[in-house]
Length: 561
Image 1 (cartoon, helix red, strand yellow):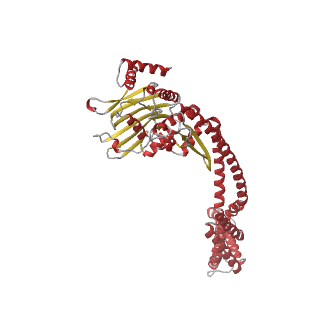
Image 2: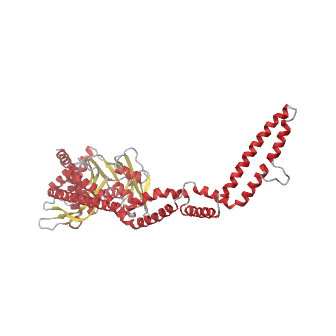
């Protein structure tokens, strides 16, 4: 709901603040005073294309600001947040600035946004119906949305069932398409995996084997040097053959121990035990050196060749897979992945079966939705036609054609609103067969029928301009009655020149020529009861007289009845 609209330097309006209340708000004023600028201001807040000539002469720019109440947890609030703005509690502030040079800027929730984003934010909140602004029915998609909104519970449930069936089918279809599209790539992956697994299985590496082989080959390659060093060390410890100087470590230790053991001194005798320990250690080391030398006797040149060959195999695995451990890991993970890839055909067949079932469910849901739309179309067309007969269009007939088209997320139905102006006329699309005033009345009838059917109300502000064009008398009264009915479910703003319509207002705003520094411009004032009577009297008789005032009060009394 719109709380307030602030207008600066737009057309004839120098400065005006419109405080709109709930229910029906009417805007009246003399011809040329600037009533249509209010509608223009709302169009600009909806992101409409701006015309620099609308900037008031002598001003640098025009600026329009709107304050609206919205659901802080609803889709509009989320759209504002997505655009970078934020609400002030449950209040949304939107603004549009039009420079005299033609450049425009827009804001939503305190954040600058493109005009198109502003329009998308405002679209669910305000519907404008004027001579060239039947915005709610400008596309077949919007006509279908109006029909769905008017269809009530059965149509809403059918639409929800179809959306669920469509989404289920689309997800399965995507998965199947992805599987088929990647089939060649997965076949190539399977071939590579089979080759890799075969290579690893042929080599059959063990964890830690590479390090063991590298150590062994290193020893074998250094065999002569190692044997020379080990042999020399063993001779120095305990020579089997006499050393050049005839002495070795064990012999020297034995001689030293003999000297100490026979010494007539207890301290020296004690040292003999420690020398004996040296002999034992030397004997152990000499034995291990003998075993080390003997181990080489078991390895011949053939063993060295085999070790080099095995080391080359392991290093090839390391080059191919990064490490030997990864090659070993591939035996487990690669086999599992191969099993998964080999199951593609089974998966594809299963998915195809699921897609077929989902497609059948989708088509059945589409037929059910189409049947509900045709039922709702007939009912809505009948109700709107009846309303039109009371809106100075006694022979008019609305038809809503529902035809088949390829399925998409909204179903398989093309919806077209057609109007026949008289009994013998061929129904044609609304924009081709109705005048601006007639279009406004058609939209009034539509919005009235939709609002009374929609679950939970429409939640919109409806703006009507020229809805009473070309009518008067009792027809004008009926228009006023229907506007008041619509205002029970939504906020309604109507620009009117008929007192029969204005009498039904909950809030009456009047555009008046300003005085003082803004002489020649217009202002918008909210009228009290006395002011309303005077404005209605002026609209009735062109001047305020006792007779006109009495007639005005009678109109207001009748509207309350």
